[in-house]
Image 1 (cartoon, rainbow, N blue to C red):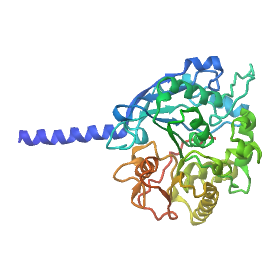
Image 2: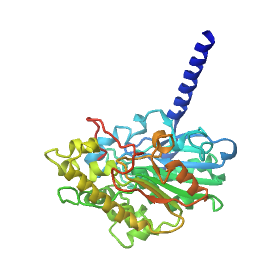
Image 3: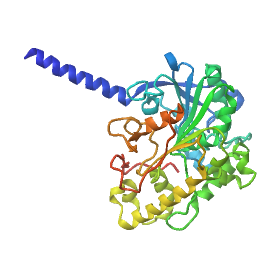
Length: 399
């Protein structure tokens, strides 16, 4: 009897240990103090920051540099509302972040990248790391220096060993995913020519569409972001030479000119874009989309029809990626946003799959050139493996 109980407790203990490993490891914060002298600072003038989990063994010279998301600010008022939060000040950031999914140090849960150096760069500039305005208004103390933050962080990591990188990935989620797209070629140019560099954009493919009221709000919003932050000079010249700078915040106008290999992970029904681009509060004054945006299962047939049109628009815009063998994609039919950084969507027994392949397997095969991966899911609700996001009633949008 006693032996049986010990066996049961041992089984429970093993399950708890595995669960903790799956949930992630806490990683402390690093402040880039020497960046301040370069003017590379957050909105409030505080130093940029990142979380660094060092690699080991065969992965000691391999690097993942991941840029955090969190929307954008498009004018002084909205930037002031962020300035004294974690999205505008490193003074307000959590000193530890949990690393799981693509950032896990467990071979079981992250077989291709578990022993790499893994860095999460905190987001505190509001411009997807593209801004650079020298002047600082003393009345607001707002600093628009996202591009300088990007450069300062990369410089700091080069000095800490990334100059010896054999393999490197720049990645990002949401606004950070957009940063990975816009800075993909720039990142490669900053690393040694011998380094194998690729880019990974998770939920960063924002599209230029009208909202449910017929207004082109996101286009105007991006125009304002670029103008406020002085981003034009840091956007790909291959785009700004042809189009207004604000349009070069849309990946569909940039991706065809990216020369560095890049992989896209995105939901065709991206939950952030549905909430904030397709049906933002300003376009839905009576709140008819509120319940639908919180839980796709609560959408009416008419709302689902509108979302199917959004999927069609997304896939049309995604067509700009083209058929280059260096590019890859995993476009699922889920109601989700950012799927690489959480274990349940990256690699678990119940993770989303396309063609029986998880996101982790698709990205690993593509990075290591084992096999290409380019798959687009069928329309909702055909994929039973989806982890469709359900939002809290009080959760606020990013913009």
